[in-house]
Length: 395
Image (cartoon, rainbow, N blue to C red; front, side, top):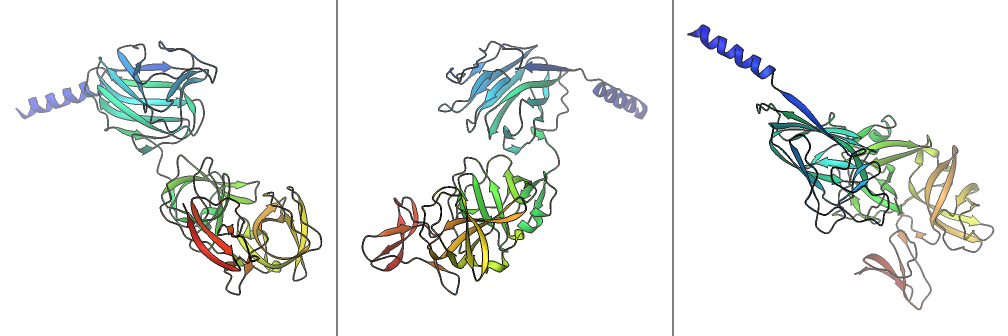
């Protein structure tokens, strides 16, 4: 009896090892599957719930949020659009789906499948199902060049659950200092919060709890100065131009739920070095012997006898010759220090806290970095009127 059971067990093992498997390829770059290939941005989008032409016993339906753009069949493949919550419903009549492999036309388009992070131009989702629903987190517009289904035709499955087959989890890093010790191009998890000290469009200059700065290049971000970027997102470390440490997000970034006012540290002109790149600092008593430029040009100032190479990189209004307490961003250009002016008119106390003085009369408003704001809205500002300064919340 034991010999018979053993023989049956061996037979079952052999049968499992010889399971029938086939692959079904959806080549969107070269075939239409009943869709219309577009090349004009004015063309319409694919309607929610559109089914593709069946392919070797498999069916695919395109889904998206009702109010979003979702999909177009484009010149390089099946284009999916950012923030559309687009997805595919896949089914087969010839067994079970065990794998779905995606090849993208470009990198950094889909950042997650069913809530699990993926990266790169190619990634694989493993499953064990006749019917499969996949929802994508789309970070950037881009096309799926092809989608390859692996089908177990005898239905024995063998899939490992509905989990993307992704590379090893990136290393979690706990500070800016650990980040800048990484090799250029390393993907990692930002395991520490960052407070935004200054930002200019996609360029965010942020500081960690130890007071070390780094730049985050985040296109389309909705952050504001003094927002705290929570820990837990994925980024790629870049050493821009070989001198400027930078984090480029992989996929979407977390929403800020906390603010923390940043006060620039007062630094003596003689102590500013290239190692302070990306830092937002304050320098007292900077002397300008002539008016500053109103355009994006370089100019010179001095503080305590030290010459400073300044640049009006943010196109601030010109100020007259005189002495100013400046808030500056430390930049490095071709190996040399170059200081971008953030504001000219912050009065710096010995404690390093920036206050703002103005003439009596009409109220003036400044952001928390001391930059004058003509029409304040939705945020915390410093209101100066009749020689007195106070914080006000504008909604």
